[in-house]
Image (cartoon, rainbow, N blue to C red; front, top):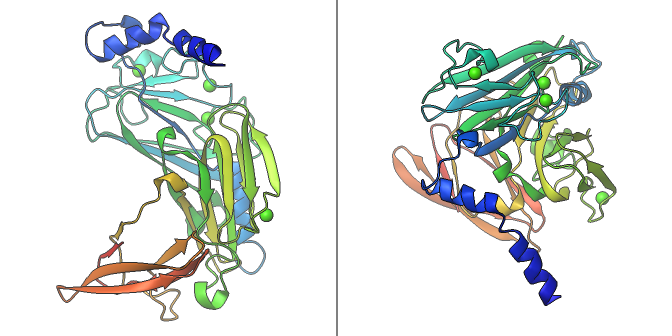
Length: 364
Ligand SMILES: [Ca+2]
Ligand SMILES: [Ca+2]
Ligand SMILES: [Ca+2]
Ligand SMILES: [Ca+2]
């Protein structure tokens, strides 16, 4: 075994890897890799899955139901001059090497050569610090892969770090029921996720805001096995295999402490809503558990009330995955004076803290 292991290890020192390492050190310049990607993104919430989630939240009753087509906005912001973006649509399959594309549908943005594509709204084809690119189109459903559109599952690579978001809504309900999530690059994906809120939070505690709780799970690699314990009973009731860029939806039925694990990194997004409530939903990208930490800042509070029933709109939900209760201390300013307080979060459960108006909070 030792001999095999050593052999395997040594075989990894291929000449290409050595050259790449030297190139990074500035010793060797390799013409073919003028702008190698350092970040990779996959747009979450394929439009059919987002529509299914929105329809589960808002259907029936007197309000206008969500229907196709969807409206999709994918945006990116650059922080460095000379950023190169590679945009690879899922519809015709992914490139083997996104920075050496062979498909005419794959666009290279920011290289000053508009013949291979340029960002919407940026005819100069130059992406500099502060450049914002917004990709927007209606997305008919069901999707026909022969129609190339900006949509969920598309793959984006960047030669310098960027930030990205995806925003969408359905026709009918329009922007009354819309969602927007930050897109984490694949370095910030993980193999273990726990959902901090869920449908089992009583209406009296959660204002029914989690009456619908669902997930979309998107894979980076072919042959990614995912396991899902949506009802948080400690047993994975669903196990399936996803290909690169494929997305699986858990369309409701997610409880506090629900878990998603995988053998390769995945992206998990959360969609929640108050069912048939004249349009109330929330969504967010979940962080994998290895990126959880013991200190957070909350920048936002508000005076507005929740639906005119006197409930402050801004609340923090604290989740404790441990087998015993934990105490969370927090500080905030009131009238310019720093105040300290604390709350207890039960084992495997949650606590809600409502934020006072005009305050920022630090949690630890
Ligand atoms: Ca596309
Ligand atoms: Ca493609
Ligand atoms: Ca170009
Ligand atoms: Ca289960």
